[in-house]
Length: 617
Image (tube, rainbow, N blue to C red; front, side, top):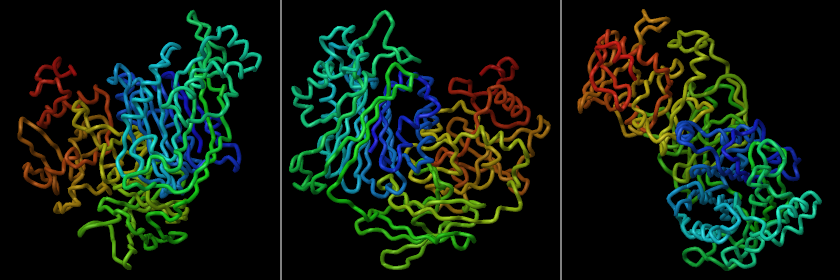
């Protein structure tokens, strides 16, 4: 297990973090799990809005760097500028279960999240492990406040389930972050002399955390390796020189990584039983700072641990069986068996992933693991515990490549079974692009600007092919000022089933399109069959559907009206347009008789007849 902590000081991420994650150290230190704790990630309002729409840049960086090494993002949690990410090798995913997150604010008396702690807990091969990333109060004189805040975090964070409700109930706890402990008593000149002379041991006994470990009961049992690296705070940004400003802060080991093993027989779970049996041991293989990273006034710290469990759960919740190669569509059949006691959900699905996928929603296509009548997914009972599903021809990737199948459990929000990599070798389509895509070479440019927005708690996979930017935005309704227009890639019928369709909505759900521009506008495309315009005036709602060249109006009671993406919980791919383009479309719609749309929550409901008013956002 590799653990990294870094106070990034609101900086932009560097271009490469390979050495920080110790990815090229050879097979002997090859990590199975990597936990990354960040503090002071830029959380200004404009930045937080962007991060709400897309994954933040730091998380994107770590996924980009780790995915070629077969690491997959298991879970992540963010509280303002405090972020925690946990990655694992893809073949370990079925053995990482009971994943939960929590966060505790301690800034401004518990109302502000600039300080506090975020945690991810999970069962690793049947043993409960918790990762806790903290950012505690700064300054030399705030040692008691740091103790109180840490005690508050331990008390407030509680998890569901019978095993390990509190942080210290876990078999193994990793506590790390910008803990902000300082060096007491010693003068800054002596501290710098000890650092330059490499006699760091003379500073250890004055380190506040070392003192607290022997005097604070709340820290009883926590262990830390020797501080054989220079203090990691405070540096002039862009250099390896300690603070040269007027404040001249004294160097300190503010960034730390500790661990604690639960003593045998202590903290029994509900029913008086321990979730894990036997003795586990932890040895620290590496504990160091990385002076080569200079984007912040802190240096990142990394530690590598070898964890020896006394027992190991070696059978995954779901076993998947697949042929070594799919060279014909009819070979795309998947058999799977579930272990006894596995809680299956009708929203479970089996995803097809490219080797090197980044997270569980980064699939190429999927089929439902359980289906109802009228759905694409074919499923039949093979035996008492065996099931079979098949991928449709259009859901399969064309060409050659290595892929992995994974069973996603909606109940546990994790992958419960994976296969070994296998080959898919299917001939590429001779027809080329979709018949609805008449843009030619411009389609690539459009795809680059396509943004995928996801519902936060959607039980089904996200629609369409996932791009690099993935959103966890709260809902589309909160962004009423956006002008939505489908891209060429998404004008075909979506392969993503919706919750309404699973409840027996008659007929196929139509693709929802907003009115297109007339052909007389520069290079505009001809209107496509099946476009739907929508308008909302007071409480009335209607849609205009063009069928066989004839428009007809659909009432709100009709199933087509209920197929609005905002009602489905699955949001379509959207393209954000410049305000000038949007206003130009509004003027065109006025001439063509289209119903007016409010450009922002503060815009007047009626259409503007004045050119000056029409140009005002």
